[in-house]
Image (tube, rainbow, N blue to C red):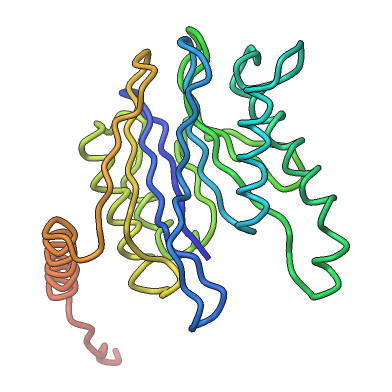
Length: 245
């Protein structure tokens, strides 16, 4: 399992992903799930992934192969819009799944993967889209300017509570980390290192930070998070049995 999220704000985009993969209690690994692709000077893509790791890696290899191939063909350097890039990635994902579906189905494995694609193409505003295994996509709404993939339920309440489009980028990274820490505390298949990316409109580059497991920053974040959670519980009114009239 994994947990990735992306926020689309007035000031730009925020991305956050964990790196843990889990194929059983004795087979836990660390793989990067936030991938930055810069195929031309006028565009930048951030691709977050959840689902079958082999499918994800083959999709990324196909994207790189298309960028290196000569001739007139679709790739991330030639698409005109971010949604075109989403449809392109969805098509590749379907093709990869179809290639291996029969063999994986025979052993009860799921070959599908889901992606969050974010970034900017040309002068269009930055955006984020979720690409489904079926190849179609949705984008974040103005009322709900975030997307999640993977283990989404534990950290969703934090995003629903605090994320609006006018939240500044610094506050947004704190909200995103709070959502991630809540998820990691509830599900051992989600964990550090955490990759954070911040994109400012027109920059065509991603500001990246990795928060390592056991780092002083992560320890401090967890201490503050737990402290204020307990303080909030202490401030709740005490339930009292109501007296009958």
